[in-house]
Image 1 (spheres, one colour):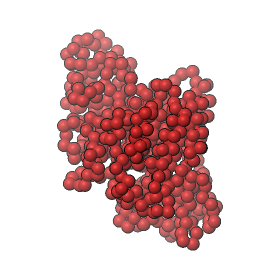
Image 2 (cartoon, helix red, strand yellow):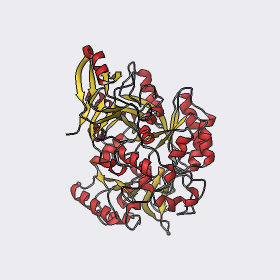
Image 3 (spheres, one colour):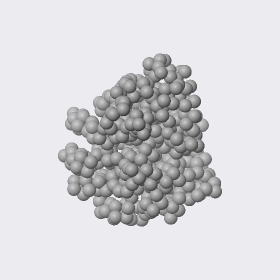
Image 4 (cartoon, helix red, strand yellow):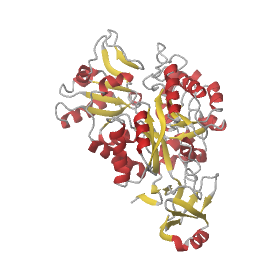
Length: 531
């Protein structure tokens, strides 16, 4: 017995403009669709429930193709610095947290971004030391490729003058060679490895609040990378299993598996006789470089803002190739973080030498700074580019100062990628960016940092609304080679739907961010309904 959905426009997204009046879902799968009268008559004996969309508009379930689900929950639970507009405001928020935190406990803040500050001056560890000497403090930059530690945390990590930066990371120092407290990429681990492992209850709470937040924005699933950061693979995976399956919080998760725990995942899979419809293991995750904000994205040219550096290779080219080879030995695709063009080039070199098996695609995550020759090479490979359209709204205009306008032509060039028949999936990279997919869609179709009369950055790269929605539907399905059952409203596809109160194809583009989700439906069941 199944459920009949009717009473609104239902876009199949199989082709632009195609819509139907009704969909019938049974056992979590779409069994029928078309004119309401026809579907109702055909499925009369099989219909147990009916859902009136009440004039709302249904789409295939929106899926965020790249984020950190536990990390997003942590942002909701921890000290959120993402809205601070100045260094002084950050310090004020930390001061309030100090008052609420027992002496000796770590204070962890999330999401500061000096590019959003009035002065753009980085804080120093001494600024944090002026607030307390009773707490180790770690403030994570929005990109999570850099953090600021206070003196107590630096002491715990034994970081002082003369401490060498680890491979793939950087300890920032002043003109006298003294650490400033800012640590980039792999150098962060010198401090973070000393932070006490969070409890299982904390992991579960972070997942619960994260999933609750996702479904209220219409997300029916995500591709997430968390399994290497919270006490090991088994402990973290069991938290996912308990929250999603045992507590029956319906939500689909494709779990990227960091190369540091991939053997643990492989052993676990070999011991399992059953597989979950809501938790699936995905590609092996690798980091090739850092971020533009921390000037650790690996470029083929010097940073305009600091010609002394062209970024960091978290993995050297030989190391990257060996990791890709390792993935192939485990019969897995790879998902590689590459923001800079040189990092992207290293990724292509590695995939070309060690291609995936047939009918499986690799993914390259972010792909922000590109060149024409790299796009030509990408066209010939079985890869999906995992892009985050919202990055445009966060990165412009300061990114121009970082890399130089002369290097911008093939950067954030999503229309060029699609015009070259390169598959693209859409994500947020939450907690780096807000979880709401409409923010990404708005950035993709407007190329603006907000609403109203604002500059358009590289307007020739605007996507149509259909293309932008496809990033979060068909694109996300292609990233996991599942476009035969996901990403469209079609017979034989899963019954996951995102229902908005207004038609995204008809609403004024600057009203897009005000559109409310009416229903989020997973496996044919309503998991969120706007009150």
